[in-house]
Image 1 (cartoon, rainbow, N blue to C red):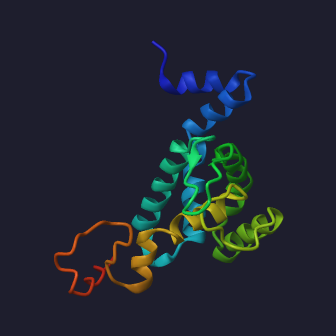
Image 2: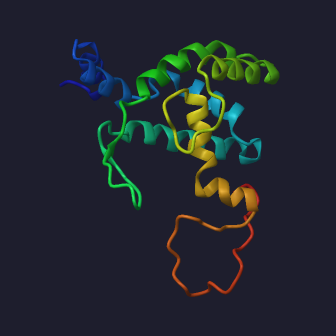
Amino acid sequence: MMRRRTLLKWLAALPIPALRAWAQTANFPGNYSATLRDLAAVVLPSELGPTGIDHVATRFEHWVRDYRPSAEMDHGYGFPRLRTKPPTPGVAYIAQLELLRRPLADPDKDARRKAVETELDHAGVKDLPRSPDGKHIASDLMSFYFNSADANDLCYRVRIQRDTCRGLEGSENPPPPLKRGA
């Protein structure tokens, strides 16, 4: 009986680039789960705490695994041009996590931050993208979180739930404050 991990490793070894990229991304972050969490601890607000940071990293993993290249993207109102998603950034993310593995294991918090800043400079990242754009895993992880409803709630310290349809009942009341640790 072939196990899923064995099948993915076998598919990743095939000389078909698209299939290889899918196989690597399907197992994202693979052996780099701890490195991804270390990166998240550097680039996300410490106010989230270890549990919140781990939750965001897990959601980012799912986003990478569920990413579908060539999927049609929303063209927006007044822009009839159809656009499709670019190739998966998952393969590049794994290579970037490999480069960051040792620096992020450094016990010195400032050294970890400096290593991430250096990698972002090498990648040419100058601004935080509106959504993950594949330039670097650090900026994409930040974009993934800071453009989310959870980050919006944390910013205002109330449970706004920006992307949730709540209906009109109770809309005259201000949003409730965030619970401690949320």
